[in-house]
Length: 231
Image 1 (cartoon, rainbow, N blue to C red):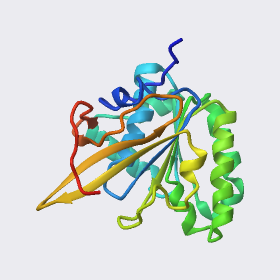
Image 2: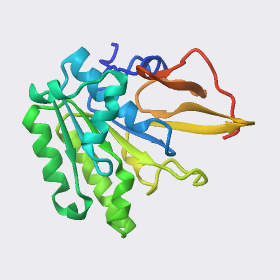
Image 3: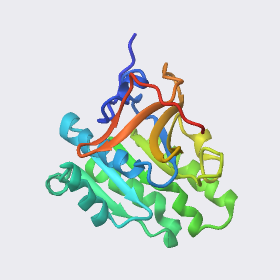
């Protein structure tokens, strides 16, 4: 029997992951700065509401939500009407108050009966919680909470260019069902963007490197093309 899928709203991506994300799954979207992770996450929330009537919660640990929404206008995504209708909630969370993170996430999800959630970015916790075991415990607990509430979610993680790993704390890729890695690399005098599906639990997926672009309509993945790069 064919599994139900949650379409991402990112053209070309669903073709690489069996038609979309499995409902109630947790995806790690990771990469260096400038790869378009926040754009992809906003796109996931916006089209979830517009095309599938799936309310969404966007939790930002770093960038002010007004900046995120203003940048989205460049792609034609106006979140203000959706917020007024109670279809989307943007939350700017202050990681200095880490003790109430779970309540904040749960309250906002339940308030609009959200089906899609973005946590952007989990790496910011490291600026305020210095003990790595505590950070890993928080990431694990957040993943359990999102599953319990039945949300299809994206955890954004920032990696360092020379880091050579999938996540900042070395636990995110293990508590998530799926891992999508964005690259921004230089070949000669040019920079190019590409992605790979590192894992997609319960789904057949591409094992190749595919180019993508940030366009005036958002992220577009060229699923039928292969990227060649020295990663």
